[in-house]
Length: 334
Image (cartoon, rainbow, N blue to C red):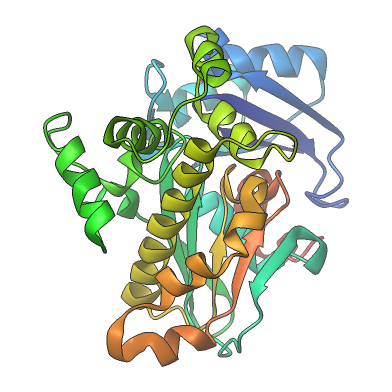
Protein backbone atom coordinates (compact mmCIF):
# COMPACT_ATOMS: atom_id res chain seq x y z
CA UNK A 1 0.00 0.00 0.00
CA UNK A 2 1.24 3.46 -0.94
CA UNK A 3 0.43 6.82 0.65
CA UNK A 4 0.75 9.59 -1.95
CA UNK A 5 0.56 13.30 -1.24
CA UNK A 6 0.43 16.61 -3.08
CA UNK A 7 1.54 19.09 -0.42
CA UNK A 8 0.99 22.77 -1.14
CA UNK A 9 0.91 26.04 0.74
CA UNK A 10 -2.86 26.31 0.51
CA UNK A 11 -3.98 22.68 0.50
CA UNK A 12 -2.68 19.14 0.79
CA UNK A 13 -4.21 16.14 -0.96
CA UNK A 14 -3.49 12.63 0.36
CA UNK A 15 -4.48 9.32 -1.19
CA UNK A 16 -4.12 5.63 -0.37
CA UNK A 17 -3.17 3.63 -3.44
CA UNK A 18 -3.00 -0.07 -4.12
CA UNK A 19 -0.43 -0.42 -6.94
CA UNK A 20 -2.55 -3.21 -8.43
CA UNK A 21 -5.37 -0.74 -9.05
CA UNK A 22 -3.09 2.16 -9.97
CA UNK A 23 -2.96 5.81 -8.94
CA UNK A 24 -6.14 6.73 -10.83
CA UNK A 25 -8.21 4.49 -8.56
CA UNK A 26 -7.27 5.47 -4.99
CA UNK A 27 -8.80 3.50 -2.16
CA UNK A 28 -9.23 6.72 -0.20
CA UNK A 29 -8.52 10.37 -0.82
CA UNK A 30 -8.92 13.60 1.17
CA UNK A 31 -8.13 17.32 0.91
CA UNK A 32 -6.78 19.26 3.89
CA UNK A 33 -6.20 23.03 4.35
CA UNK A 34 -2.45 23.01 4.97
CA UNK A 35 -2.26 26.06 7.20
CA UNK A 36 -4.63 24.53 9.76
CA UNK A 37 -1.97 21.96 10.67
CA UNK A 38 1.31 22.44 12.50
CA UNK A 39 3.24 20.14 10.17
CA UNK A 40 2.86 17.33 7.65
CA UNK A 41 3.23 14.72 10.38
CA UNK A 42 0.02 15.75 12.12
CA UNK A 43 -1.88 15.91 8.86
CA UNK A 44 -0.74 12.40 7.87
CA UNK A 45 -1.63 11.13 11.35
CA UNK A 46 -5.20 12.40 10.99
CA UNK A 47 -5.60 10.84 7.54
CA UNK A 48 -4.25 7.45 8.57
CA UNK A 49 -6.43 7.46 11.70
CA UNK A 50 -9.43 7.75 9.38
CA UNK A 51 -8.08 4.96 7.14
CA UNK A 52 -6.27 2.45 9.39
CA UNK A 53 -4.65 0.14 6.84
CA UNK A 54 -1.01 -0.99 6.71
CA UNK A 55 1.02 1.41 4.55
CA UNK A 56 4.52 0.40 3.48
CA UNK A 57 5.57 3.32 1.28
CA UNK A 58 4.92 7.05 1.08
CA UNK A 59 5.66 9.56 -1.65
CA UNK A 60 5.06 13.31 -1.36
CA UNK A 61 5.28 16.09 -3.91
CA UNK A 62 5.97 19.28 -1.95
CA UNK A 63 5.76 22.93 -2.97
CA UNK A 64 9.27 23.85 -1.95
CA UNK A 65 12.93 22.94 -2.09
CA UNK A 66 13.84 19.31 -1.46
CA UNK A 67 17.34 18.60 -0.20
CA UNK A 68 18.14 14.98 0.49
CA UNK A 69 15.61 13.64 2.96
CA UNK A 70 14.26 17.03 4.01
CA UNK A 71 12.05 19.65 2.38
CA UNK A 72 11.07 23.23 3.17
CA UNK A 73 7.55 24.20 2.11
CA UNK A 74 7.61 27.64 0.49
CA UNK A 75 4.93 30.09 1.63
CA UNK A 76 3.91 27.90 4.59
CA UNK A 77 5.14 28.23 8.19
CA UNK A 78 5.88 24.54 8.74
CA UNK A 79 9.05 23.02 10.12
CA UNK A 80 11.04 21.06 7.54
CA UNK A 81 9.43 17.85 6.33
CA UNK A 82 11.76 14.99 7.29
CA UNK A 83 11.49 11.66 5.48
CA UNK A 84 13.27 9.73 8.22
CA UNK A 85 11.01 11.14 10.91
CA UNK A 86 7.88 10.25 8.93
CA UNK A 87 9.17 6.73 8.31
CA UNK A 88 9.97 6.19 11.98
CA UNK A 89 6.67 7.56 13.26
CA UNK A 90 4.37 5.72 10.87
CA UNK A 91 6.39 2.60 10.14
CA UNK A 92 6.87 3.33 6.44
CA UNK A 93 9.49 1.20 4.77
CA UNK A 94 10.41 4.09 2.47
CA UNK A 95 9.49 7.76 2.05
CA UNK A 96 10.14 9.74 -1.14
CA UNK A 97 10.18 13.54 -1.13
CA UNK A 98 9.90 15.37 -4.45
CA UNK A 99 9.54 18.96 -5.49
CA UNK A 100 5.91 19.47 -6.53
CA UNK A 101 6.88 20.26 -10.11
CA UNK A 102 9.01 17.14 -10.27
CA UNK A 103 5.93 15.21 -9.11
CA UNK A 104 3.80 16.90 -11.77
CA UNK A 105 6.42 16.06 -14.37
CA UNK A 106 6.26 12.38 -13.37
CA UNK A 107 2.60 12.42 -14.40
CA UNK A 108 3.06 14.14 -17.77
CA UNK A 109 4.02 11.08 -19.88
CA UNK A 110 1.05 9.21 -18.38
CA UNK A 111 -1.60 11.87 -19.03
CA UNK A 112 -4.42 10.98 -21.42
CA UNK A 113 -6.37 13.32 -23.75
CA UNK A 114 -9.10 13.80 -21.16
CA UNK A 115 -6.48 15.27 -18.78
CA UNK A 116 -5.47 17.97 -21.27
CA UNK A 117 -6.69 20.97 -23.20
CA UNK A 118 -4.52 21.54 -26.27
CA UNK A 119 -3.70 25.12 -27.22
CA UNK A 120 -1.53 24.00 -30.13
CA UNK A 121 -1.17 20.42 -31.37
CA UNK A 122 2.17 21.03 -33.07
CA UNK A 123 4.46 18.16 -33.91
CA UNK A 124 6.22 16.48 -30.99
CA UNK A 125 9.67 15.03 -31.68
CA UNK A 126 9.95 11.44 -30.40
CA UNK A 127 12.23 11.49 -27.38
CA UNK A 128 12.38 15.28 -27.36
CA UNK A 129 12.67 17.12 -24.05
CA UNK A 130 9.41 18.17 -22.38
CA UNK A 131 8.93 21.42 -20.46
CA UNK A 132 6.44 22.00 -17.62
CA UNK A 133 5.54 25.44 -16.26
CA UNK A 134 2.95 25.77 -13.51
CA UNK A 135 1.64 29.05 -12.08
CA UNK A 136 -0.27 28.33 -8.90
CA UNK A 137 0.37 29.99 -5.55
CA UNK A 138 3.96 30.32 -6.79
CA UNK A 139 5.55 29.63 -10.18
CA UNK A 140 7.05 26.18 -10.69
CA UNK A 141 9.10 24.86 -13.58
CA UNK A 142 10.44 21.42 -14.46
CA UNK A 143 11.50 19.38 -17.47
CA UNK A 144 11.75 15.77 -18.63
CA UNK A 145 14.52 14.10 -20.61
CA UNK A 146 14.40 10.81 -22.50
CA UNK A 147 17.03 8.33 -21.27
CA UNK A 148 16.57 5.82 -24.06
CA UNK A 149 13.77 3.85 -22.43
CA UNK A 150 11.65 6.34 -20.46
CA UNK A 151 11.21 10.01 -19.58
CA UNK A 152 12.91 11.12 -16.39
CA UNK A 153 11.76 14.33 -14.65
CA UNK A 154 14.01 17.01 -13.21
CA UNK A 155 12.99 19.87 -10.92
CA UNK A 156 14.19 23.44 -11.11
CA UNK A 157 13.72 26.80 -9.42
CA UNK A 158 13.28 28.57 -12.74
CA UNK A 159 10.27 30.48 -11.45
CA UNK A 160 12.60 32.49 -9.22
CA UNK A 161 14.86 33.85 -11.96
CA UNK A 162 14.86 37.58 -12.72
CA UNK A 163 11.82 38.93 -14.53
CA UNK A 164 12.70 40.16 -18.03
CA UNK A 165 10.13 42.61 -19.45
CA UNK A 166 9.36 42.30 -23.16
CA UNK A 167 7.57 45.58 -23.93
CA UNK A 168 7.10 49.12 -22.61
CA UNK A 169 4.21 48.16 -20.32
CA UNK A 170 6.27 45.41 -18.68
CA UNK A 171 9.23 47.78 -18.34
CA UNK A 172 6.92 50.11 -16.40
CA UNK A 173 5.80 47.15 -14.30
CA UNK A 174 9.41 46.33 -13.43
CA UNK A 175 10.07 49.92 -12.42
CA UNK A 176 6.95 49.85 -10.24
CA UNK A 177 8.02 46.66 -8.45
CA UNK A 178 11.76 47.28 -8.03
CA UNK A 179 11.38 49.52 -4.94
CA UNK A 180 9.11 46.89 -3.37
CA UNK A 181 11.30 43.79 -3.81
CA UNK A 182 15.00 43.08 -3.45
CA UNK A 183 14.62 40.90 -6.55
CA UNK A 184 11.74 41.01 -9.01
CA UNK A 185 11.36 37.41 -10.12
CA UNK A 186 8.91 35.79 -12.50
CA UNK A 187 7.07 34.40 -9.49
CA UNK A 188 6.27 37.96 -8.41
CA UNK A 189 4.49 38.68 -11.70
CA UNK A 190 3.36 35.26 -12.90
CA UNK A 191 1.66 33.37 -10.07
CA UNK A 192 -1.18 33.59 -7.61
CA UNK A 193 1.11 35.71 -5.46
CA UNK A 194 1.98 37.85 -8.46
CA UNK A 195 -1.48 38.62 -9.85
CA UNK A 196 -2.23 41.23 -7.15
CA UNK A 197 1.05 42.95 -8.07
CA UNK A 198 -0.11 43.28 -11.68
CA UNK A 199 -3.52 44.50 -10.57
CA UNK A 200 -2.04 47.12 -8.22
CA UNK A 201 0.35 48.34 -10.92
CA UNK A 202 -2.40 48.75 -13.53
CA UNK A 203 -4.68 50.46 -11.01
CA UNK A 204 -1.91 52.84 -9.93
CA UNK A 205 -0.98 53.62 -13.54
CA UNK A 206 -4.57 54.63 -14.32
CA UNK A 207 -5.01 52.24 -17.22
CA UNK A 208 -8.42 51.18 -15.89
CA UNK A 209 -10.62 52.21 -13.01
CA UNK A 210 -11.29 49.91 -10.09
CA UNK A 211 -15.05 49.43 -9.65
CA UNK A 212 -16.35 50.17 -6.17
CA UNK A 213 -17.95 46.75 -5.81
CA UNK A 214 -14.64 45.00 -6.46
CA UNK A 215 -12.70 47.30 -4.12
CA UNK A 216 -15.21 46.44 -1.42
CA UNK A 217 -14.73 42.71 -1.99
CA UNK A 218 -10.95 43.12 -1.83
CA UNK A 219 -11.18 44.69 1.61
CA UNK A 220 -12.98 41.63 2.94
CA UNK A 221 -10.88 39.03 1.07
CA UNK A 222 -7.89 37.26 2.50
CA UNK A 223 -6.64 36.36 -0.98
CA UNK A 224 -7.51 38.76 -3.83
CA UNK A 225 -6.29 36.48 -6.61
CA UNK A 226 -9.53 34.44 -7.06
CA UNK A 227 -11.49 37.70 -7.07
CA UNK A 228 -9.34 39.09 -9.89
CA UNK A 229 -9.87 35.95 -11.99
CA UNK A 230 -13.60 35.86 -11.31
CA UNK A 231 -14.04 39.55 -12.06
CA UNK A 232 -12.15 39.25 -15.34
CA UNK A 233 -14.15 36.27 -16.57
CA UNK A 234 -17.56 37.34 -15.26
CA UNK A 235 -19.83 37.31 -18.30
CA UNK A 236 -22.48 39.41 -16.56
CA UNK A 237 -20.22 42.28 -15.48
CA UNK A 238 -16.61 41.84 -16.58
CA UNK A 239 -14.17 44.18 -14.90
CA UNK A 240 -11.87 45.97 -17.35
CA UNK A 241 -9.11 46.35 -14.77
CA UNK A 242 -9.19 42.65 -13.84
CA UNK A 243 -9.33 41.60 -17.50
CA UNK A 244 -6.35 43.81 -18.35
CA UNK A 245 -4.53 42.26 -15.39
CA UNK A 246 -5.10 38.72 -16.66
CA UNK A 247 -4.05 39.64 -20.20
CA UNK A 248 -0.81 41.06 -18.84
CA UNK A 249 -0.36 37.88 -16.80
CA UNK A 250 -0.93 35.75 -19.93
CA UNK A 251 1.63 37.72 -21.91
CA UNK A 252 4.25 37.29 -19.18
CA UNK A 253 3.43 33.59 -18.84
CA UNK A 254 3.75 33.12 -22.58
CA UNK A 255 7.14 34.80 -22.68
CA UNK A 256 8.52 32.74 -19.80
CA UNK A 257 7.03 29.54 -21.22
CA UNK A 258 8.92 30.28 -24.42
CA UNK A 259 12.09 30.95 -22.43
CA UNK A 260 11.78 27.57 -20.72
CA UNK A 261 11.04 25.80 -24.00
CA UNK A 262 14.22 27.23 -25.50
CA UNK A 263 16.36 26.49 -22.44
CA UNK A 264 15.55 22.77 -22.49
CA UNK A 265 14.81 22.57 -26.24
CA UNK A 266 11.34 21.22 -25.50
CA UNK A 267 10.61 19.62 -28.86
CA UNK A 268 8.60 16.95 -27.03
CA UNK A 269 6.02 19.48 -25.85
CA UNK A 270 5.22 22.25 -23.39
CA UNK A 271 2.71 21.66 -20.59
CA UNK A 272 1.00 24.32 -18.47
CA UNK A 273 0.13 23.08 -14.99
CA UNK A 274 -0.78 24.67 -11.69
CA UNK A 275 -4.10 26.03 -10.52
CA UNK A 276 -4.37 29.11 -12.74
CA UNK A 277 -4.12 27.95 -16.40
CA UNK A 278 -7.21 25.67 -16.30
CA UNK A 279 -9.23 28.60 -14.99
CA UNK A 280 -8.18 31.03 -17.73
CA UNK A 281 -8.27 28.83 -20.83
CA UNK A 282 -10.38 31.40 -22.78
CA UNK A 283 -7.61 33.97 -22.35
CA UNK A 284 -4.86 31.47 -23.17
CA UNK A 285 -6.71 30.76 -26.42
CA UNK A 286 -6.48 34.41 -27.43
CA UNK A 287 -3.59 35.16 -29.85
CA UNK A 288 -1.53 36.97 -27.18
CA UNK A 289 -0.32 33.88 -25.34
CA UNK A 290 1.16 31.97 -28.26
CA UNK A 291 2.46 35.21 -29.77
CA UNK A 292 4.38 35.97 -26.57
CA UNK A 293 5.62 32.38 -26.38
CA UNK A 294 6.96 32.37 -29.94
CA UNK A 295 8.37 35.88 -30.15
CA UNK A 296 11.98 34.73 -29.91
CA UNK A 297 13.53 36.09 -33.10
CA UNK A 298 15.14 33.40 -35.24
CA UNK A 299 13.67 30.64 -33.04
CA UNK A 300 10.03 31.46 -33.76
CA UNK A 301 9.76 28.70 -36.38
CA UNK A 302 11.10 26.14 -33.90
CA UNK A 303 8.63 27.22 -31.22
CA UNK A 304 5.74 27.05 -33.68
CA UNK A 305 6.32 23.30 -33.95
CA UNK A 306 6.14 22.61 -30.21
CA UNK A 307 2.84 21.19 -28.89
CA UNK A 308 1.33 23.27 -26.09
CA UNK A 309 -1.14 21.75 -23.62
CA UNK A 310 -2.95 22.86 -20.47
CA UNK A 311 -3.11 20.17 -17.77
CA UNK A 312 -6.76 20.13 -16.73
CA UNK A 313 -6.63 17.21 -14.30
CA UNK A 314 -6.45 18.82 -10.83
CA UNK A 315 -4.93 15.63 -9.42
CA UNK A 316 -2.03 15.42 -11.87
CA UNK A 317 0.62 16.26 -9.25
CA UNK A 318 -0.87 13.65 -6.91
CA UNK A 319 -0.74 11.09 -9.71
CA UNK A 320 2.89 11.99 -10.31
CA UNK A 321 3.80 11.62 -6.64
CA UNK A 322 2.16 8.20 -6.68
CA UNK A 323 4.02 7.07 -9.80
CA UNK A 324 7.28 8.29 -8.29
CA UNK A 325 6.69 6.14 -5.21
CA UNK A 326 5.95 2.96 -7.14
CA UNK A 327 8.57 0.46 -8.34
CA UNK A 328 9.64 0.96 -11.95
CA UNK A 329 7.87 -2.20 -13.08
CA UNK A 330 4.56 -0.92 -11.72
CA UNK A 331 4.72 2.64 -13.03
CA UNK A 332 2.87 1.78 -16.16
CA UNK A 333 -0.30 1.24 -14.12
CA UNK A 334 -3.09 3.55 -15.20
